[in-house]
Image (cartoon, rainbow, N blue to C red):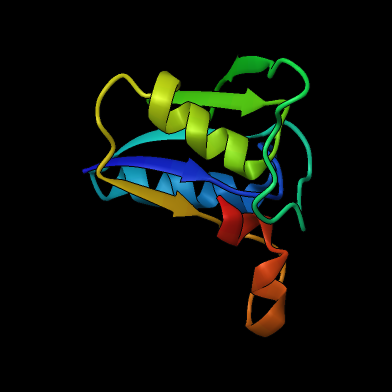
Length: 113
């Protein structure tokens, strides 16, 4: 299965790396597209007023990995529409270091992605 992994805690989150490693170990083909820095509580925010910078990175288990100077929604949109070389079967958002339940889901960057 072709997976796109995104999050809101940023590309360097150890939880994102763990999810990538676990998915690849189960035979999935993984592309990572995550914010360059922490983007929690960005909800459904996306960038419209400036260019988005995309940086190729490395992550163990990922066929391709990208850090984006934008929000989690930007990462999902760019991953699906431009960066993934093949159609994606599933987008996985998270694992993150926050609590996403109840009213917090409205502001959650993880849920927005």
